[in-house]
Image (tube, rainbow, N blue to C red; front, side, top):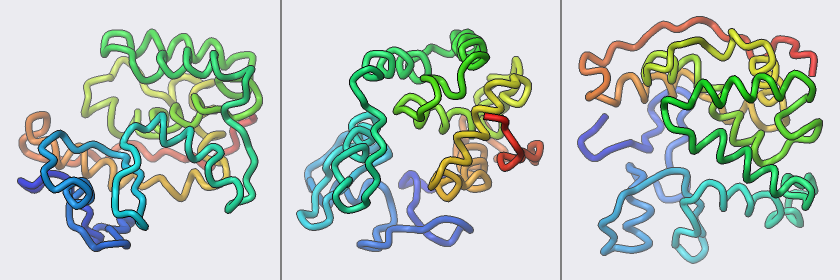
Amino acid sequence: MPADGRTLASGFPGATGDGLHGLPFPRDPSTRAAPRMSGRVTVPVLGDSARGTIVSNERAKIIRMFNAAFDGSTGNLEDCFSEPLCAKNDERNTLVHDAAVLQVFAALDLLELRLSDRRLSMGDTPAKADRRLSCTLVRFDPVCHLHFKCNRRRIIDDPNLWACARALYRRPGMAETVRLVQTVRHHHGGHENRNPHRIIPINPALDFTAPHGR
């Protein structure tokens, strides 16, 4: 990883770069919006190109904005935050994203059990929790299992979680956002403290397009 942190360069296959301003690093949109900023830069970031500022860098809020704020432009009225699901969404998000390392597999065990009698984690309809879970499931085996030492087992060893991962991957617009080769190279090649020799694992081939039965 460059000394300046993550890069937005488009030279890597699948990377799009910053097509709006051509900025090289994720910190640049933040300092462009607030030149005196000295805090930690995180992703994702939702920006306002007309005003040249950052709207939010909190993924839960960004997901909630995308759920309804652009319905008039996109015509997509799918609601991941319907009232009956909101409380359950918050509970499931806590389970999936805030579990400590030692609780990771306890959370996965619970999800595997819950998925035994439902199509997705909240039922038959994709919800906010499923969209966030999809990122975890897609990255777990090629990154977390080895790089973050979460190697008790893999997602493909849990039939319900693996089927759910494939079902979420097949949702419209999901596959286009997945760049596993880039994700693997970033984590294994960019975290020198975890992988000082920057050895990139070959990893098993994962077929997210295989039939999932959900």
